[in-house]
Image 1: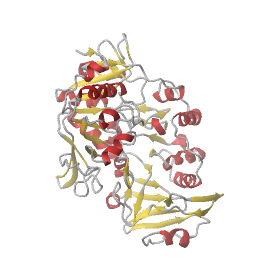
Image 2: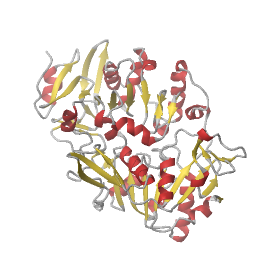
Image 3: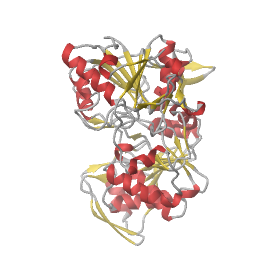
Image 4: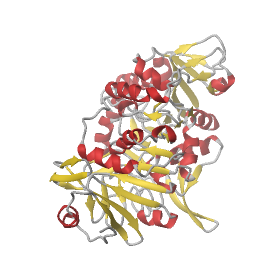
Length: 506
């Protein structure tokens, strides 16, 4: 039977040395009050300590002084295992200072490894991660110099086929955010953007004889409709009622609590972008990339569009009359609708369905998408891509590896170079006014997020679309497929590459 406790009382139940799994997605739906109660306790007593924390998609709120950042900074954590660290600014810095062990695994592989624990299986097999950084025969998942846990990812052979085996430490505590708890302890997620891994996490914790702590906005007397219950009360040990976050109407639209017709998507998107600081000034280079990339879309495509430059693809899909003829998806579990950006990345405007995150990655891992559009820090002569790690910084691989592993058409959207790049586009002609000081095309990427060799083996079609040209992956590496009108092939492209490429266009 569950107990209703205060957040401070709940925090006292967590023992030193435990492995906590947090259900959240980058910066959304984090049980913030539970994290801050843990911080208050640790700040006063130095307990709990020696914690391991697992989260498929990270558990920050884009604020270095809120949520878990305080107790991580003061030394309560010995190990972090996350798919993405983007919303955790203080923690990212501490990771690179070797303050604790930190591991980056593909988001979907963590999600599936949690689900495996829920079914009593130690880990999950996947082809995702082969030949990229997480493969222990390359770099392994450790981010800093003190992260050497070789139990998390292992290469294995099953019936003559190569896989990676992802195994997480046994999860003993769940920290979950839900909307409401009824008198039976059933947890609904009605006012939330997603449910993520909530059910799998709770099942895994109970399989390990641990405790499930759920923060909710309210208690209700009327039992939840069975199909609306995400976590049944029999899996819940502690319920903490915390004042709900005050959300503007634009953000409430992301919960799916009212219908948003396609004709209204644009207006809601603009309101959400304004509130989430996602709106960016019109950028001729980004717009040129988005316009060209959108030409790869076809009616009835199932699509994933990454954050950053790839987001411009949706703008031109709307202009081309295709946006309502394709099905967009987001890693957190949303299908249909329009993905939100900025601080609410992971939510969707007008979603048709939002299901468990592990199910979404079943779709991605099996090649269920038709096409995806991803960003990139670097591309090398072989066609390998680095999207997760820059010089002295990192964000984490997130769902990138799962999304690109089997999708038939993969489109990378990136500028040819950066830091000072200026272009002008008039009608269909592009003029390079100034090149950036940092090249994006290099001889060898510093870390591999996407393996060109694996893509060729899978028979995937891979394009690299820039503001001046398009490259295509071939068995011999990159080839120049297309040069935009107004661009000088020799001066603006070939002379600036550190390697030779075959030219497939005139």
